[in-house]
Length: 122
Image (tube, rainbow, N blue to C red):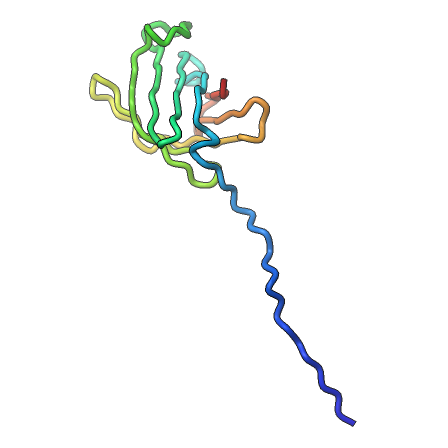
């Protein structure tokens, strides 16, 4: 007596656990602080991957963007990591700043790696 069995490879693939966050999801005005919450700062993330920083370094408790020291730059997203590159008029540059996004939070936040600074999407 002979028994024959046939097997077929499943074409079902496991669901990816990779987080995909798009520029459109993070685009908007984010308010927070820098230098371990010593100074107010806000960041406008645009959907085209550019950003504008409103730095209140000279007036730490202000939220008035017309009095801010402005920087410009770009950002990229890899998984849940937001990487920013910013330049200010005096030549100061911050390259490769790493932040962790939490777009499932309410409100959405990103945290600066290596500090207590948190930005909240407005």
